Length: 377
Length: 261
Ligand SMILES: Nc1ncnc2c1ncn2[C@@H]1O[C@H](COP(=O)(O)OP(=O)(O)OP(=O)(O)O)[C@@H](O)[C@H]1O
Ligand SMILES: [Mg+2]
Image (cartoon, rainbow over the protein chains, first blue to last red):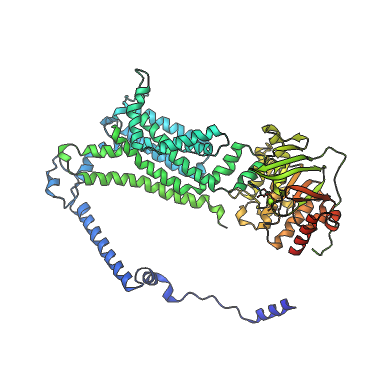
């Protein structure tokens, strides 16, 4: 009965045509009004900030472009010094960029580390694309990293041998960061799983590892790796300094990443474990198909945060005399002719770090959105 | 529950060795004694409904059967295999026992189809094609084949629970355990899940079902078990237990749930 009356009543009312929102609510002007000029105080702050931004931008353009010196004839830096700071001396970059990028690697062989950098970037790009996430990708990694090793060391295929002490610059940073994170991440996953193990020995070992490593600064770990570690090795045996630093970085990053991963494991409801067990999945099947895929998705933001932190922390190897990107930049301006042009060099080095870190950050955002699509209805 | 329900003929085979045997099972959580001498014999093809007040140990009992919980005393034999610390015995039992949870516990990052094929492919070592065909067959049987490519989060609660039933059935279990499969559902979805379970009962599946759905119990249960404070207090046909309760505890419980309905 009541249904019928409702229906007829509804049918009589003509359907309201959709209207566009009032003009005062859309468009650029409306946006400006609500966001920047909603009150007198807001307007004043907006204007002040706009003024500062414009001033600084003009100042930077004048310093960095208009008044800048782009090159000087062989190490005659007088032109730069005459600027007295009103313009940038980009000549230092023109002159020293090969040193900053490749350190003391033999000049004629610079194409080799340059190719390595390209290989690294290519490897990152391929790994970032989800359609390449197959088993073969592991082979691509092994092949690429082997190729990089061959290129850097040489000694075969007609490439002259270059000892590790002469490697430097960007390629060192990429080596430390790539190997560091690529090995620390699986280590971290194992440690995080181990911390939740039912076997007391494994659990204790993992807790001990995380707490010990987290309790000391990376610098002291690097010192230990470079000074103390060789003392424990038998006479005559020597592990390469870079490798020792690399191991220290892997162990350190592993402990931090393990805690991030553990956070994800803890966030999963118990029911997911139980459903997987009730279906008869083994521990590793359960972990690989159900637990980790969900736990890691949950922790993409803190995971990438830690990745970015460690990418930059590789620069700490400078204290044990390894020539990474930052150290190379610092060393480039030791020469008397180029002293005093630190700002230009550090800006450039900073820009290189920024490109890599920003790319990681952007990528993680898109990955997060894509992988968590199943959560949106 | 006024509609007339057709009793689903019993498929129980009391002559065969029991599908599940609980013999004086005791369990403690810390110092709390949650199962006290629980003994229960479930024949192949028999359908048992377990009811009782909250905290009485219903979930714990059926979770002991597929060893999501471990018992400390007594014997549990499932499909002829005694539960012990032996991993292989456990694997064998979990392959034969399917479980449906109150909170569905579908895997949210996998599609409905992947939820259903994962275990057959990796535990039963079934070829992928075959597993997918089987999954579609069961999804059709629970009447949601068109949702196969969706993710669990895109389905209603009732649909999710039906997927959970299909997922368990894809392992071709001999025994199905249900732990309050309808109590997280809105009333209008309860019926679709119960209908699915009645359909399953018609196939002769051995079932233990924790539920307070009296209509369902009358329709399919060979036996109703009433638990209170970790003990089995009464046990019998639905008519015996619901119409002729012997103990005050059961009388109290029945009056409470009847008031609730
Ligand atoms: N993991 C656990 N740790 C400690 N105590 C538990 C645990 N699980 C259950 N218990 C306790 O064991 C007792 C029996 O719990 P159980 O879940 O089997 O009850 P139930 O009959 O299923 O109740 P409900 O109807 O609320 O689901 C309860 O007192 C509960 O608090
Ligand atoms: Mg329960």
